[in-house]
Image (cartoon, rainbow, N blue to C red; front, top):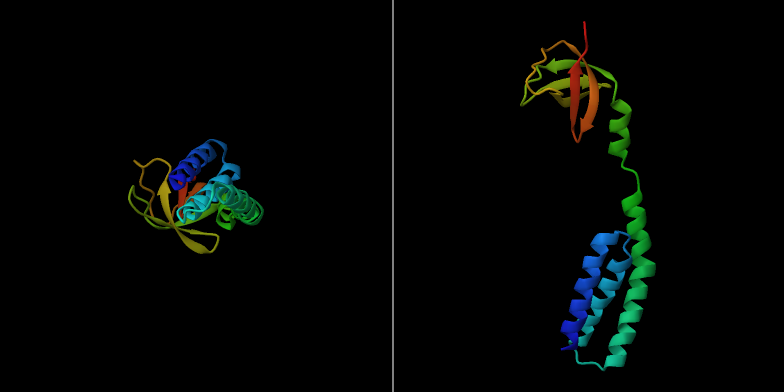
Length: 143
């Protein structure tokens, strides 16, 4: 029975983490989940509480800093994409609503027009307005 209670506590803290997003409640939920597994062995309540405190503290001090560093690290792709916005590019393959390629900063990129109803001919010069994952969103430069 104690195992189900600890499992319920783990779920409650995991749900609370969704509202906060700081990994605080997630570490406590992980400690409760660990304690739920230990409680399956039929240990006394004092041992369960001790296991909960030790497991939660362990997750807090060992896993939480790693998760913070990992998720707060800036993405190299994001920085690259931001540096290409406003750059001029040559259309290599006609840009249609479903496909197209441009030569941008010395490499080939898949591209789509800002307005999907426009087709941009090969050889045209375009300006990058956004980077959407691996696709450059472009608009045709005025002649």
